[in-house]
Length: 485
Ligand SMILES: Cc1cc2c(cc1C)N(C[C@H](O)[C@H](O)[C@H](O)COP(=O)(O)OP(=O)(O)OC[C@H]1O[C@@H](n3cnc4c(N)ncnc43)[C@H](O)[C@@H]1O)c1[nH]c(=O)[nH]c(=O)c1N2
Ligand SMILES: CCCCCCC(=O)C(=O)O
Ligand SMILES: [Mn+2]
Image (cartoon, rainbow, N blue to C red; front, side, top):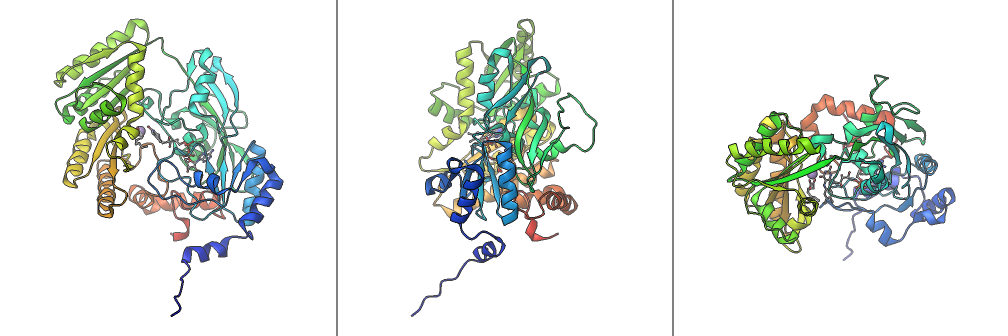
């Protein structure tokens, strides 16, 4: 008997739209443009570039190109447009929504070799960097200026990737997210042309000039253009820093205290919530000795004269919500230990169940809705019998439930997906968003339609079609352009 082998429809479509003969021919052409040393076709390099840090399935690109300059990026994109080849930008691959996968193959454009800090204007509190500079590298470079770039996703991400995902982190409550800290971007468009989003030389603190192109390209996840340079705001390293830890009797008390602190107008620099499972995981993984209870980690930045006053106000507020303890961490080593543990929660959560896979949610709601939202999440985790650990940038109304799953248990995976959908829909019901900082990528495209409605999504499609008519820039991410209106 002859077995018929069906060819997936996606492969047929891929062959139909691609205008390059083979991956090899593609690599040869690209080597002619950027040089042999900047093009990789080995299976291992392509595999490394096929996925990010999330649970989303990877898809390998045909070729990986390491751009060394804006000129390289422009030439590569122009070439890819002529051949209808997808271009997928890659920063450091720490994204959490599958943004760097290559479902249609094509060229993965790695920007890590564009790693120069181009200028630092300390007197104006700004700098301009190439897209591949990481946030740690920038902070090391500017250390002697007394300035810092405080946006801190847990990973040492590239600044281009952080612009592309509109990243934030623990200090956004005080210093804002990428949206508030990007002043100008250099972007290569889908035809290879190069623009500056806030004027050819602009780095002024404010502008009313024309459309806000900068914020169009912040959070676009590589679907509208390739970010090659970013002009960023810098902030003074505070004269004094004080941290504190406050365990509470239950999660509602901890979150209510957060809301009260935020509503009092206290300029808290960090206020992070950890539920008791997360505290337990941190104790085990980071060798801490915290009380296993819903807990707030706080930090205050200021001058020597006002830092203690800030701490006292927070302490009084937490005590009025019956916190079990309020302990200040004054020594640098203790503070670093706490924040290192906070940034390692992903790994701490995984260590609870060896061989597991993690799945992270990322809803954000108005601060007054946060107690009900976190309580809702907790109830749903229990109802669906999941291993879920909650961690949150609660001062911004943003939190993550990290779900630890057995990758071979399909029934459990389905319950995790159900939970993520229920949670996102509840956030929308509470006037929030399905993602505070991780983006849409491949997993939240359907929910994005719920968030924006048909007219909103259609407006996004119009923008995408105008800027990328051949749909070569990171296709399949944020919106499905092929699905029609
Ligand atoms: C342990 C841990 C902890 C955290 C996080 C990750 C991990 C592993 N993150 C998520 C992640 O660090 C964040 O999304 C970064 O902004 C991703 O930057 P990469 O350079 O890794 O981009 P990565 O390479 O992963 O790309 C992300 C997306 O941006 C696109 N892209 C990358 N560079 C581009 C460029 N130059 N031009 C155009 N498009 C580009 C890619 O195509 C993709 O769609 C996070 N995030 C957060 O906001 N807050 C947090 O607290 C954390 N915490
Ligand atoms: C790698 C996923 C960890 C989930 C949460 C990451 C994150 O945003 C954080 O705040 O931590
Ligand atoms: Mn986060």
